Length: 370
Length: 95
Image (tube, each protein chain N blue to C red):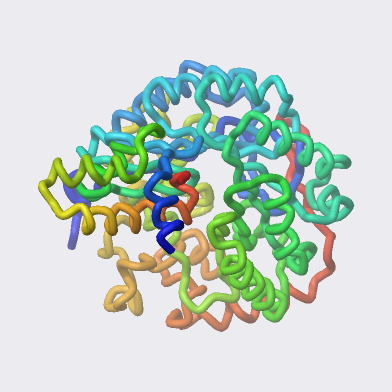
């Protein structure tokens, strides 16, 4: 039995800071948990600064300032400035809604390195419907202009699902028009709000394969002009994704209230004990918290993973997906064709892809949470 | 071909905004940081990239490295060009 120790654990490289769960948009595939954390539970400015200082010391190189909408935090410029002062590479992941031209120039001055802007569709009407926010598409075009005027490198992120998958190539063209140097075509990952919305989001196998082939062709055509990254559609895959580059191997996620989790969906796995930055240092949490050590290494793996030649390539896939589909977080990710339950995944995809488009459960706070 | 070659040698490589070369204290190595990308530099790449200050031309960088490592300038030029061209395709260096 291999017990993880500081010498075998290694150092984390990236930290996703969910500064707030507040967001003007209501995208039905949001990766935030269905039980959103309210404003009154959010870490203070000083609390976040301590997290970033400890992160830099621990070996974190890149910080992704996300949410919710990170610009909803009034202290966003101060937090960016602090990250830059401790040497962290900073990436703002924004919807663009609520962002002003003044804020963009203040962020540039504070030392922000990069901005990632989400776009819901290349068709304005459809984009606004997906976001649950009228005028979002038009506003984002203006914000992209401000970002480029301030000479920020821009990534456009587009989440693909049944309502927009026919336009995945058009999304790449739109990203080029907006001056992006990188575009992320991310097929919906079914966690958070996307899971209860799966029947409204799942594309058919044919639509998925067409979209993946189109992106592949565009990558060749635009080589050297724009970097195109593809997040693969699990439900139509042969092998599982190397989720987070391995459980608690490279990344740390901090929720608005300071709970430290190995990935944004890991709270869905019952029985895991998560520690909070208000009670422990980030270093203690990385090396010693039970949730981070739960699936490190290969000792936890069942067959067919344990003897698989890909066990250190994809690490058995995603624990949260194994739990979501099979009710067992220790199982092989059913996205893998070697999983005895793989057929369940393809069956779900086929059934769900026949659902009604646009019948969304929009992301929102319950009435009693601000 | 010769004209293209000369153009390349007078090019001044630099890191675009959003790309940073950093000495990683925790791991004691040089890393190139970019949007959602991180490249750990081997000692040769680290030596090349530390000379990319936005002022030196590629031919100056080659000359400096050739004298620093007492190596054949033609071989250095081939290696430096391949490294920087690869990074340029990934938008991590501007030429």
